[in-house]
Length: 190
Ligand SMILES: Cc1cc2nc3c(=O)[nH]c(=O)nc-3n(C[C@H](O)[C@H](O)[C@H](O)COP(=O)(O)O)c2cc1C
Image (cartoon, rainbow, N blue to C red; front, side):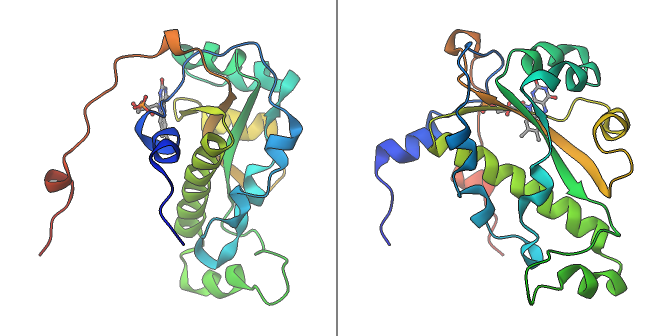
């Protein structure tokens, strides 16, 4: 395998931004169906089954109602807003033959932390996959998890983790980008 070219690295990371406001352009189903996100590695390969339920099209208003006030317009204006979900501690593992990860994890008492780890990883894969497909993202943790869980996942063994708006962002709404740590500051070798 070879490194992606500079343009691809720019699109995925260097010039990719977190979007606050959205153009009125729908996200095609083909983009959302691309088999990209589910290929990301996670503990026991639970896969983002948990990412598949969300506020699609008409349901943004219900999702926005549970968001912090500053986040509501960012959800309402997006083509798609997904609540990144994590599997509840007692949820069964991936039904894929031979994958019994949840059963293996349950006795060790780390299903909860694993579910949080996996769903956060899956959200990161979602963001990178969306950018690779030419979409923009707006992740948010400012919302009522209890409210979203009650509105969208009542009676199900899933819990919300974060919300991610997807669509075609308005560049004019971007803030000045925040600074990042240098390689030296971000890495400590002992
Ligand atoms: C998990 C997560 C939660 C976030 N929550 C919020 C939020 O509630 N409201 C908000 O305006 N931005 C939120 N952000 C956006 C971040 O502040 C933003 O991604 C960061 O400042 C980097 O911006 P940039 O990609 O434009 O450089 C969140 C980002 C992530 C990844």
